[in-house]
Amino acid sequence: MGTTLIDAQVDQLTESLLSSYHTSCPETLPRDSPGEQPWWGADLERKRGKVRKALNRAMNTCTDEAWDAYYAAKSSYKKCIRFRRTTGWRNYCGSIESCQQANRVRKVLAQQNTPEIATLRKPDNTLTSSPEEARRILVETHFPDCVFAQVTDHSEENQTTSEDDWLYACRMIALEKLQWAIHSFHPSKAPGADGVLHYYSGVGRRWRHV
Figure (tube, rainbow, N blue to C red):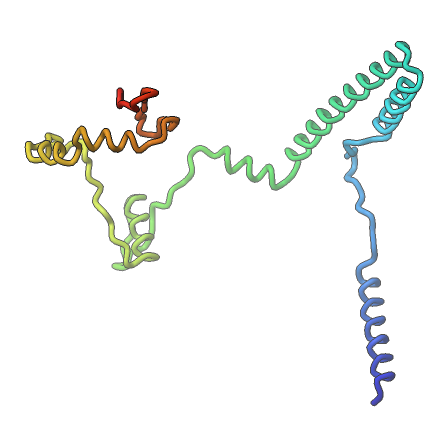
């Protein structure tokens, strides 16, 4: 089989595929929904043309009357744009309220008392008696290696600092170490999350305040 015959068959196959595609998926233009109007309309197009003509006339003639006419046309054009934007946004919000998906979401969000899962069958063929027990069964079923941690209220623990802790703090936090740490900062360093402020004298870079 020669290359000429192969090329002819490839072209025929390509033409058949394209013809089938165009027949199955004809080109169409999207149509607007009933009552829906685009934000930009012919009236805004005409007003923009008037503004451009007024600007060209004012720049060519340089008269006060021409500039006043340009400013008036520009003000009217901007006012019409603001009105069309507000109206378009209001119509868009109103159209959302009529959508089935939006109504479904609104109903879900409006539910205040969401029902909780309270009855599940446990491995021993009994039923749970509370939402807490049902949630625990769900966690144990889907995450069998999960370990439930006991939350400790640290506010009830004894917070008294021992003498050994104070001695250790005095050894670790000395005045010389603080001075070295403060002097290692740049003079223009802003206070960080710890709230530390740094002040330096202009000559001796003497540490004044922390």
